[in-house]
Image (cartoon, rainbow, N blue to C red):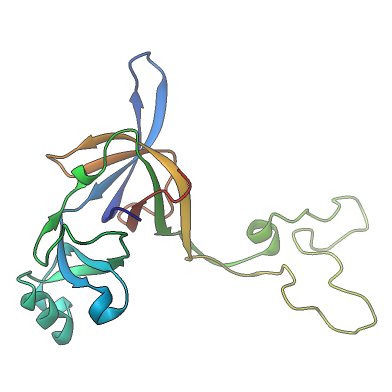
Length: 209
C-alpha cells in the first residue's frame, strides 16, 4: 500500500462527464488526517502510519488516548486508524494527510461497516427461495425448507439460517476516483460504498489495480 486516508460517507449523487454520460458516485469527506504515530521496522517490526480523523470533545476520548494524541501535538480526535504503507520515510508525526494524495483516475479499495438489519429471516439474509404458494403448503412460506436428513439427526455447521444480518466490515475493491475537491476535502468515487450516511470509511490505493 502506498497511500491511505480516513473519511466519512456523505451520500450518493451523480456527475456528468465531458461526453454527457451520467456517472453515479459516492461523496466522501476524506481528511484532513494528522499523523498521530509513526511505526518503524526498528522499533515495531513493520512500517505504518496511524492517522487521526474528526474533531471531538476531549471528554469523548479516553484519557490514555487523549494523552497519546496530545503527545503528537494533536487535539482530541474521534477516530484512529493504522495504515501499513510500503514507504513511510516521507512522513513525520504531526504531518497532515489530505485528500489530494489521491487523484482523479486512481483505483481505490474502500472499507466500511454495512447497515445493520438486525435479526433477519433466511430469505432476506441468504436470498433463499420461498416455499410454494399453492394450496396445502404452509402455513408459513417465507422460511427455509428441509434442514437436513434423518441420519445424522442434526443440522450441520454453517447451515444458512435466520440470524443477524449486516453490521459487518466489508471492502469494495477497484473503485475509480472520479473527482477530487481539495478545498472541501471531498472525493467522489464511482459506484456504491458500504455503510450508511455518516459512516466512517477507510480509503486505500487498490491492491488489484
